[in-house]
Length: 291
Image 1 (cartoon, rainbow, N blue to C red):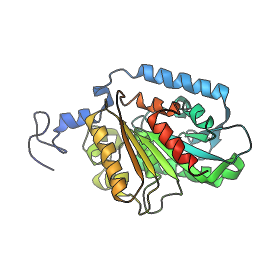
Image 2: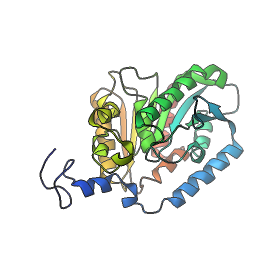
Image 3: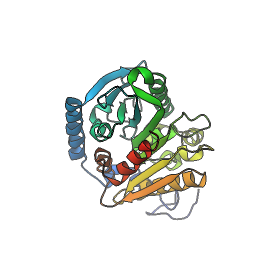
Image 4: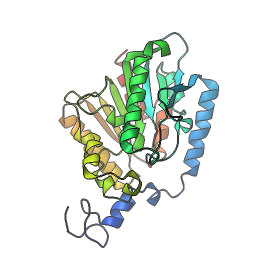
């Protein structure tokens, strides 16, 4: 840790950020004050998806009330390739009910869409949240035949803290058999998060931050990866995405990295609802390659 003067008026805590500047870099509301209009849009689109599509709701994959997933499927028998989506919310907010809105874009392309719910911090630790999402993926693959999805064509996607959780599904020495991933505006190195005000609720120590940081556990045979971020996001979120993409590529993984002009941290997730958007077109092309 450098003792040099950082961005702000105090000693540097991480890179050239002092404590106040680092805290601001990991507080989305320092850049976007009011998120209510985005949340209203997510909920409206999700309600429409549930009304219009074939869905099996609240599939139980674990013991707690939040350990449920909603599975949206194309018409027909299948088995269909499936994308497991992990929502964001700083690990502490939201639920799967707000995040069904990408389903029509996937289902319209013949891909099932599984939106997973999980317990939130601080009711559970971040390590437990990671374990729940891993269990959801294991459950989906184990029950693929009954659910009408293809266990050999499972993909993952996530946004914000959900991108961090999704990234834990494709990293580590015992990563599940995932064929590819789309990660938007995520956090992949928890060390600066640990040093920021967010650690007041995450309560990570140095070892836990290292263990739960996807960038430190890239597998020897990485799956294809698409990483996106908005040009109107906080600098640290942009840096984290670029660094993860670079590390993935350095490990030999097929990597597509894209900075999306005009997008902030909250509107970028709507790109998943548009099959012609740059990240979704790349992701659907990746899924198509496995049919």
